[in-house]
Length: 149
Image 1 (tube, rainbow, N blue to C red):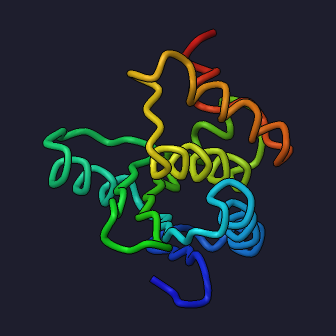
Image 2 (cartoon, rainbow, N blue to C red; image 1 turned 30 degrees about the vertical axis):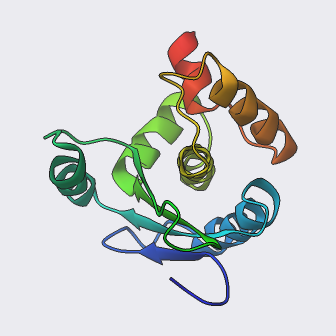
């Protein structure tokens, strides 16, 4: 956790992924969506996401994004988000946008979870918030919208 704001850590991902736009986006998420509360994001491999999913959620499967809320432990820190760069690349190809945009979509989704939203139980609240923020942040269709097609 950085005292200067939200941090993005890139581990085991190709050099072709442009880091600057992702880091700028994290700052925008912190300022606008998280209302000044920090979070950290790990952009990493499928294998690491699978390990985290197995270790913390008991699910031995790869996934595109995971969120780990800090709870009330730290007042100005929301928690951690982990994103699979490989999943982001595949989904970007499938939906016709850049890998950086897909990582941003996944980060937004993860931050909304850190804020306590849960699309499986909230009767559309998270879906509406994600759609509103995607438009404001000029992002393509988000995760929840894709599933509802």
